[in-house]
Length: 99
Image (cartoon, rainbow, N blue to C red):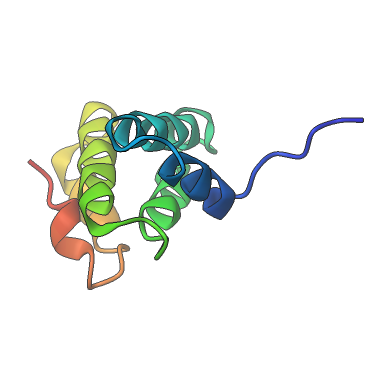
């Protein structure tokens, strides 16, 4: 039988079960998977949803958005990154500021 892929929430919960020092690596791994393998030109949508999960602690949420911005800055012009950040929920938007 094929293993069903974990939902984003299950991924976050799996990471939070790890020792604190490993959590950020775990979350970053799942996030990069979404960014690299997501649909071209829309790869950021699932990544943003992942970072906005309420189960993600605030500290990890900030790091999550930093990683999205870092990745987007490599593949999109600054103006496109700014437009993408406008799609982020207003309470998290400051975390998505382009560098």
